[in-house]
Image 1 (cartoon, each protein chain N blue to C red):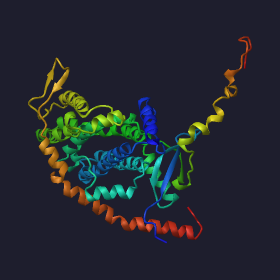
Image 2 (cartoon, one colour):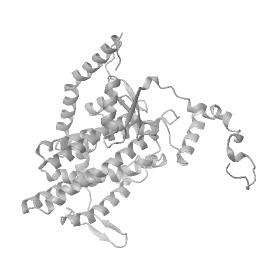
Image 3 (cartoon, each protein chain N blue to C red):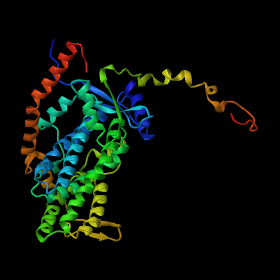
Image 4 (tube, chains in turn orange, blue):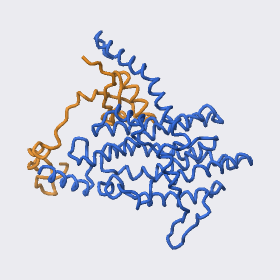
Length: 96
Length: 313
């Protein structure tokens, strides 16, 4: 087996404030997860942009295919009745 | 043909200001242009650390030293944001580094000038970072998503760089006669190279039209250069210094400053490797990379060993 000489790529997710979701901010290379977290701190939170970091090795991220986006999301396209505004109700009706 | 339909859809998206993302179809030339531009930009951030690092140990106070370190650290960060953005286009980090080290890839020629005095830290912050900001703000709306997002992050951080530079010059401009001379000397040396940072004149810039159609570029080189000159011509008054251009004067009709001719011969010379510091800069980069090889290998070996022993960190 050929020895891998390069550090793998990691995707970085940061929670900017307590109560918010972790959000993807970018990626970086690191030898392991501990180094990825430390590097993410230095690269992406130099100005207190985060209070929590997730790192995921990029090879484990699976994504939907943009070429199939129209058919893939099609099932939701004609179901306007999933939205509250679809329903005709009198203005007198309160608290709904 | 598939490509015809795809390229129509692609240009439609661009025209509607819909961002292109890594897995979307894109023309080969668009991908190549982006890889070239983003990697050159990344290389510039990384090489750009060298002229300033030169002054960290000689900064005149602890405050100046702390801010200069923070600025250089930001530049490392900017290089990393940009390398990752370029990697989403299918080029590896190693390929980019190899291209830099072999001289195949370029970086901003401004970093091939030496930093002779402390005032150069001020002039670089004010003029070089000022010109960079002028170039970079429109890139926050570039059509390629990962590039635009990296640029948003970079632009937020750059404004500290410019302000710290101007503050250095302002302090010198209020100092002793020798300090004032040092301030003017730095402006004299950095002015024209900064004006050249916007690249060739529009009529000599073959890629501009295509890049604007793809919305990678939003303004031409000359438009951005004019804006830069207009702003600096006013700001320099605050320093009580002058810009080294005897043809610089306000043109009431154009509502812009006129300025003297640019020495493109010098520009080409420096780009082609004959600037005062080209060899030194590249040698410093290559040496840092080679000296760090054992660290990269050791970290990888350590990570593998941990997996072997079943205690992933």
